[in-house]
Image (cartoon, rainbow, N blue to C red; front, top):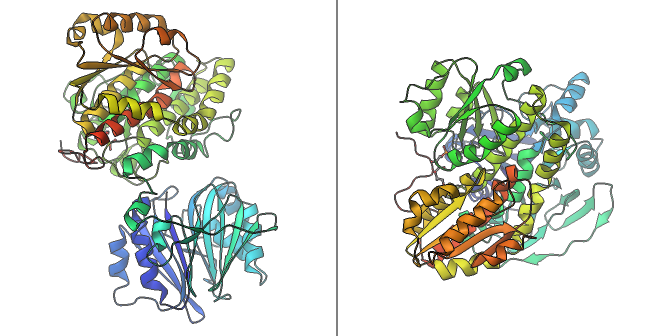
Length: 609
Ligand code: AGP
């Protein structure tokens, strides 16, 4: 998830672009760059690292000009580096592009363009856009951008500036966000409103498959097939701080709501439809390696560990790979039995968690193949693992991990189906059924997020309770552990996550009117047993908050409160069940008046052991 800005007006563009990028830095910060049209030359400045690196790079040579584009990068293709930083140019530097998204067919386009004599200078998918526009350009920049956009597959929001057109910026959008700011004698393009909020609150929201032509006095819109479109101009009421959180009160709530997009982006380029074969570029394992794996060892901490726990059920039952579970801080000290047929599955949002890195290095030293599931591109885990699969969740700012968790489980599901096909351990029907179910999950999460009043009411009722017990069975044992962690880390209420079948072996002694139980009661092989566990708790005056399928009527007889979720396969249900547990923790913490994004005692990335 990168940040793009464009400016055209009567002021010097450079400081406006830099300030706009600063307000978008939450969208990604492994490199940044700007390009300004100075006279008839485009002056491009880039720097690896946070925005401050770019600012110091241009301190004594800030480009002068009244039109420009800027970019802050969250790398998806190509490691963070000056070469891979945007803006990217055509062969002769006559035009530049900044882009947010993932071009899925960039390799094929790049080969075709190289065949036509184009020379590339980066590993990115974005650079393809610059050369496609160059190839199509014959004096009409809007038409050239339109033709280029028609050839792209995937998600994009990009802005193009040409030295031939000092009074024009042209942009295109599909799936990635793009907004237009309308000022007085100056106009703006950006990934998000905060970038230009100090200058104007008049905004056009650009729709999918749309082209924008922007000059100093107006914006015009057309569809990708060239039809002109009239757009409604909105006036936003947010202040700058609210705008950075997309109008949400906290980053955590914003990131919870970003999960449908994050899940879809994580599938992009790996699964193009519910019937398509799964491809996992970057996995770092041959088919032979995959067939030779005789066990997997999980290397993860906290929420990432819970994602692995949910995934374990899939890997064992569908790919027939035994999975050893241990938090990373324990794994490396227990003399694990690891050899060259062991797969070390390393899961980490930040890619910098010290316990996880240490355990990964230990597993590698003992001969394991390491496959990392990482959100932060170019992080230590991503660089050191034999293979890396990114969760394209975008930067996760809130300490409490949400969209990283669900996209981690999504990647494990993709790995499981990919392995199952290669190892011949999954029937074609089961494989097809799970791909169909997996494909619809982003929409199901979106559906749940459209109405969760029930969760807010439950959070208000129980926000002062003495404690919570979270129970689940099978893959939803992970949901129970994750639910308990979320409540602890932001609401500071004691909570335990337990295998539901364990309750009668001791924990049920804790049940009383001041200990509410959250039960993950979505459909599964052990649903009836979970109902019995709920009955045991009810018999001891414990309140039951059940997370259950929309069509489940049995649960009505046993739960005090029911949070209805869309039905899916039991193996995939922890992805959907994560949303109510995240929202319950968020609203309990909110009713308790807590600082939610930065909870006490916690850090976003634990880089010490
Ligand atoms: C989750 O809400 C916590 N912030 C914490 O458990 C986190 O998941 C853990 O520290 C692992 O972080 P990582 O994914 O960046 O390695």
